[in-house]
Length: 235
Image (cartoon, rainbow, N blue to C red; front, side, top):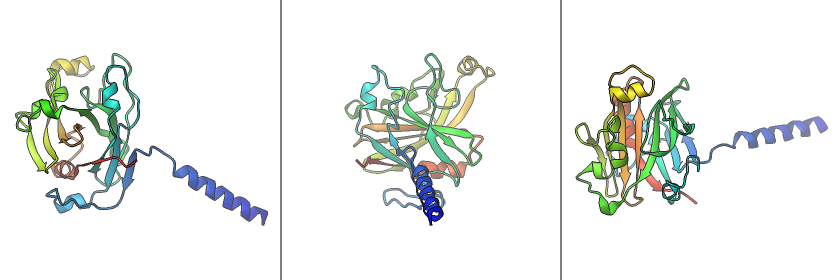
């Protein structure tokens, strides 16, 4: 009898431990549909990941306090089967993220593929709805779109994917200059990745998602972009 009780207690403890983790990153196998998004069937076959930003207060300084003290919001994004999201490591002072999202956004999360390889990142920033124009995306995404060595192209390759009353999502190119690549310790030549830009004017925030162009198909990339939905975080 004592042995049976001991086994039962062990199982309850194990279950409790397994349920713990980062509550701001959630994975679900439920298929989602969104009446505000003109979605293709391929999206519904991809598990939805949910991330609440800011994920944590890591990276918060006296210079970006306002960005971290916003009302939290949740981003829903569909990713291929067995892909996952985790909070990224914060670069040390004077360093940049040599993988993705070199600058311009905060509270970055890594996107891991089915072999646990980092194939992209997502981060967010705020913008002033009174100082921006939907007809000129650069005014919204200026922190990530105006860099010389690294930037999301919010002009030439910018292509709207979905539009609702409150949000717009676009795909674009992420451009690295030869000098910037050399500064990161790589060969001095241009580099291009796939990028997604999406904003919500009710929340006054936008997200930037950069993905390795060699690790994702055009079909997957389009489906991911179409799946993006913002919402206020549940309290």
